[in-house]
Image (cartoon, rainbow, N blue to C red; front, side, top):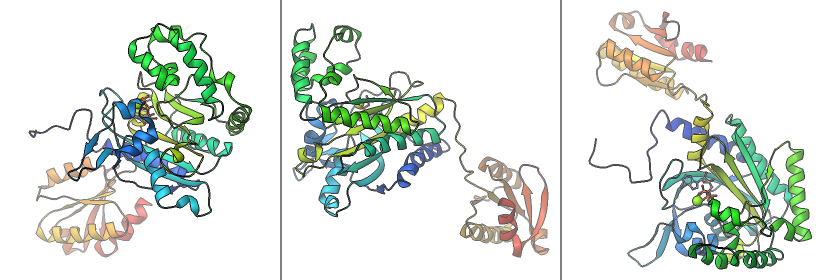
Length: 420
Ligand code: ATP
Ligand code: MG
C-alpha cells in the first residue's frame, strides 16, 4: 500500500468492476444518441457565479456542497456540482440557440463534485450522464426525456425503479402558491434553520425527511390546487403522453427537487433497493434558467442520472451485465523465436479487430497458462520451436480444452472464423 489513499468520499474504479460503470454510461447514452441528442463536453470547473445564480444561493448544493476556490489570478471558480448550468452556458456561448434549430438537444457524461457527508451512494466525486433539450416549450419534449430514461434503465434490466412526477408551476402561479405556503409554514413549530428556509425556499420544506416536520405538514396548501390553467394543461399532456408510451409513473405532489431553476414538469427516478440514497436520477423543466444566467428566454428541460447509484441499483437487483470478454485470444510463446512470431501475430490480430493479449515477462508455460485462464480468453495460442518448424501454432479452445494446430500464415483468418 502507498502512503496515500483516495480522498474521503471518493473511490477508484478498478477492473473488472469498472467495466460495469462503463457499460452503465453507455446504456444511458445509447437512447439519447438514438434520439437526436449531440454530445457536449464542458470544463470540470466554471465561474462560481454560474452556479450561485443558476442553481441558486439558497440551495444545499451552492450553500454547503460546492467546492469553490480562488485561482492565483483572483478568479473565483467552483468544481461543477451539476451539469445543467454548464451545458446551458456553453450552448449560449456558442450561440447554438441562434442556428434556427430549436430545441438544441445535448447529452453529456462526466464527473461532478459536491462536498457532502459521505455514505453509501453519496460521494464527493460522482458521475452522471445527462441530457438537456434547450429552447422549446413542448410537453412532448418533457415526455421524450422521461421515456428515454425509462428505456435506459430497462435496457440495463432494472425493474425496481419508480418514476415520480410533479409540476412546480410557472412564474404566474408559483408565487401565489409560495405566499400561501409561507403563510401556512410560519404558523408551525419549526427550528430556526427551517424557519429561515420559509423565507428563502419554502417549497423545499415539503421535501423535509424528518417525521416531526412531515407530521405538521398535513393540511399544507398543495401546489396542485394553485396551478394556473396553462400549467395544468401542460402537465396533463405530459402525463397522457407517458401513459400512451406505456411508461408508468406516480404523481407525487410533494416532489420539489433541490435546485431553484425548476419550473413546471419535475421528476425523479427512485430505486427501491437503495435505502435512503434512493434517487438514481432526476430532472425537469427549467424555463427561467437561461435568463437567470444572462441569456434570452429559452424554455428547456433535462435530466441527470447518477451512474454510481445506477451501478448500486444493479447490485441490489442482482443483475450481472453481460460484458463482452475483454480478451478473445491469449498468446503463450515458448522460447525466443516463438516470442517474436506470436508477438507479431498478436499485433496482426489486434489490427484485424480481435481482442488479443500476450504473455509478458518471460513466464514459464505454467505461469503463462495461468495468465491465459485469468484473461478470460476463449482461445490460447501456444507455439514452441517444433510448431514453428512445421509452420503452425497450436490453438487451444479454453472451453473444451481441445487443441488444434493451425497454419501460421492462415492463423488470423482461422481465429476470426472461429470467433464469429
Ligand atoms: P439527493 O437527493 O440524493 O441528494 P440530488 O437531488 O442532490 O440527490 P441531483 O442534483 O438531481 O441529485 O443529481 C441527479 C442524480 O445524481 C441523483 O439522482 C443521484 O443519482 C446522483 N447524485 C447526486 N449527488 C450525488 C452524490 N453526492 N453521490 C452520488 N450520486 C449523486
Ligand atoms: Mg443532493
